[in-house]
Length: 304
Image 1 (cartoon, rainbow, N blue to C red):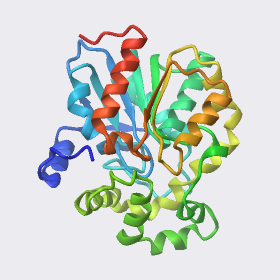
Image 2: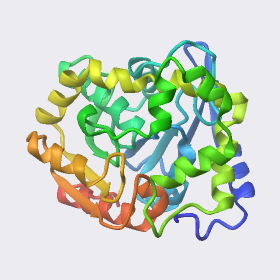
Image 3: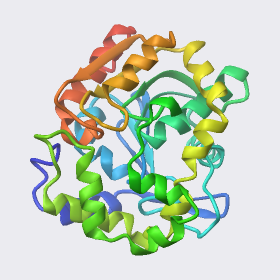
C-alpha cells in the first residue's frame, strides 16, 4: 500500500482536509486541494468512483516537487456536497472540473486521472478536440479505468445498483459488503488493511454519501451512450496520452490495455504494474510516480 509511511491515518486525513478549500461551483461546495510552487507546471488530478481526492495522498508529496498540484472531490464524492439528485452525469462533472479550471485561472496543465475520472477526462478531451474546452491540455495519463464499456467488467454490486433494485441494494449496503467488494479489485499482495478500509468508508459516508451510490453509478450508462465520442478522442488525440495500468485489476486491467491497443488509440507511454490491481496510486505509489515521470521525460517535459 502507498500509505506505509502515513502514520496515524485519521490525523493524515484531518490534515488533508484542513489544507484544502471549498469553492462554490454551480451552487455546490466543492472540496479542492491546490498545493505546490506556482511557478511549476500544473498537474490536474481527477479521482475515481466511489472514492475521492484522498486517493492521491500517496503520490502527492513526490509529485508536488515537480508540479503545482490541483485536485478536487467531484460532486457526490469525498468532502464535496452530495445532493440527492436522480443521477450524476459525466457531462455535469466535466462542467464542474472546467469551472474549477476557470476559477483557478489554469491556462495550461497536464492531467492524471483514474477510473470514473478517466471518463470525465475523456469528455473534457472531446471538448478540447472540438475547440470548446477551457484551458489548454498538455498531456493526459489514465490509470485503471473503464475507457471502453465493452471491457469494463463491473462488479455484481455495481450492476445491481444500476438496476431497478438500486435503491434497495444501496439501503442494505454496509461496511462489510463494501470492504469485500473494494478489496476484491486490489492486487493479491496489496490489499488494503482494515484501518485503510475504514478510512475509505468514512470518506464515502461524509455528508451521508452512501445514500447516493445508486445515483452516482449512472456513469455506466453514460459510457455506453457516448462511447463513440469518447473512444474517438483517444484515437485522434492531439496531445500525448499515457496508460499506467495495474494488470491484475479484474475491472479494467490488462484486458483494457489490450483493447486500447487493438483500437489504435494514441499511446505515447505504457506503464505496466504487473502485480497491481485497480488502484495503482494506492497500491504502488512509488511505481506510479516513476512511470509518470518517465512519461513526462519521454514527451520532453522537465519540471525543474
